[in-house]
Image (cartoon, rainbow, N blue to C red):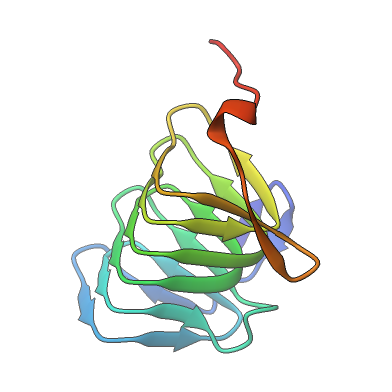
Length: 134
């Protein structure tokens, strides 16, 4: 069982550290990745799949899910139907589409932020985002 700030999330599948998967992955429920995936990672039902990316994990490919808790590296476009938490060591090289975003100090995005509102994408100007100084 994995507990997050937004409640409890059941992890049904795990890709362990030191494991590399080449190819597309479709999952249901919860998936935690501690290893490397080279290919697309998507929830079979994008409205109910939770993806947890650990500090050592890396994905080279697109990601689609409803909830994302991210602390590793993703190279590719990401579409999250509901909630994204980018933890301190999160690295993204690609566009991020989201409904709700929580970004911790230290997380980095090289790409566009696209807010999903009523099923439409709306690009966010980084200059308009408030920052917190440490």
